[in-house]
Each structure stands twice: as C-alpha cells, then as structure tokens.
Amino acid sequence: MEEPQIRFDDGAAYESYMGEWSRLAGEVFLQWLAPPVGWRWVDVGCGNGAFTELLIRRCSPEEVQGIDPSEEQIEFARARLAALPAQFRIGDAMALPYADGAFDAAVMALVIFFVPDPVKGVAEMARVVRPGGSVSAYAWDILGGGFPFAAVQDELQALGSPPLWPPSVEAASIDALRALWRGAGLVRIETREIGVQRTFADFDAFWAIAQTGPRIAPRIAEMAAGDVQLLRERLRARLIPDADGRITYAARANAIKGWVR
Image (cartoon, rainbow, N blue to C red; front, side, top):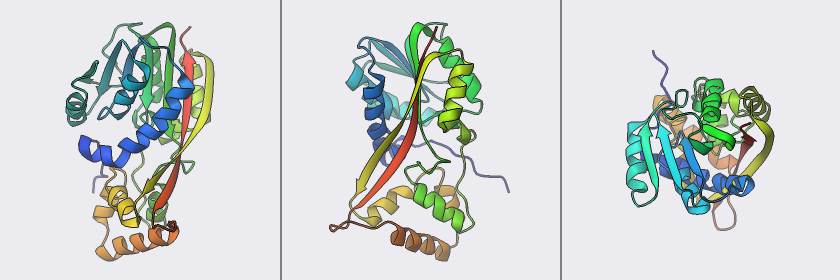
C-alpha cells in the first residue's frame, strides 16, 4: 500500500492545529531578527498566511510576496489578508518565480523540513535577495523532540505506528541549518533556539487539535478503535493538568539568520 503523504490542503484546519504555534514562535523570531520597516519580503512556504500576517503587523513592510505549493492554502491566505499589502501565488520553494535581488529579505517559517531539496531552497532564497539583505528561517526541532505535538508522535511510535516524517526532517537541526546557510554563501550567520508554550483548556481540547495534524491524522485513521483509545489513555497519563484542568505544552524551534554578500 502506498505511504500516505503529508498534505496541507485546509487553511482553516491548519489554523487551529498550527497557526497559534506559528505565531508564538514567530513573535520571538521577529524580535530576534529585528528587521527595519519598509523592507520587501518573500515568505517562502507561506501556507495559510499565519506568519505573513504577523510579519505585516510587526514589521510594516513595503511589500510581501507569499508563495506556497498548495492552492487551498493560497486561497485561504488571500482571503485572510485581503486588506493587507500582501500578494500570494502558487509556486515551488526550489524554483522561486522572482528575479535576482528582487527582495530585501526572504524567510521560511516552519517550512524547511518540507522542502525536498533544502540546498536548492536556501540557494533560491539567497538568489532573490539583494546584496546586504537577509535570509532567515525557523523550524521545529522535530528529531530533537521540539515538535508541538511530540507527545503524540512519541506515543504513536511506542504503539508501532510512527507518524509521517517530512521529507527533509533532518534539515531543522542547528548544525544542518548552519551548513545550508554557509553552503548558500551567506555571511554573518547566527542561530538560536526558540522555546514557546501553549495552554489548552483541558485534555480533550488538546486531543481534539492534536489528532488533526497532517503528520498524525493519517496514522490515527489507520488504527483500530481500541488502539486509538489506548493512545488517548497513554497521552492523558502523560500530560498532567494544572489545578484548573488545563494542559500546558512546550515546543522548541531552531532559528537561523544570515546575510547576502
């Protein structure tokens, strides 16, 4: 049987699953990046526009171009940011449809592990940024346990049904990111970890969202009802609520920034 693929074809579902996490990490990332106002940006792998919106509201750019391979996500982003200075198009991170030096900055937010060839993806970001401009990214440290729903990932693995892995999951490590940025000829490279946490009203609220993720949902759909119940029980025992029943969960991303010569 053909292996299921990780697909992001529902902007609204992505918003509840990952949008809040993206903004939490994105806030810290943009504070660290500290870009000037008025820059021209390309948001590579913009998805449903969650980070694009944050970028516009925090950095007052002159222009933002968002690009993503999912038609459904692009449509959602266009509707979401219809009143803001952003344009969106379907496209490939490894073959950006822009001229050399067209932007002041290029960014990938939670994307690099989905790019089949990260070397090409980073090289393309560097190509479309002017000399002296910024190339940056942040990505969940999936292999290091930093994914927002790593507990579900771990328990699926323990039950013999590992979650789907992005095609370039190893690219999100700090060492891999540094190597990619150096390989693209970028200079003044800096990295950091970004730790964030999100609170859910109770375990059921956590579970309702966690099981919808495109890495996890296909595996749960394949499981027998009894195994799904066992997964819930193992997670409930693992995630200890506070006195009000709330579940607070932490995640960690790796971030990198560099400059075009």
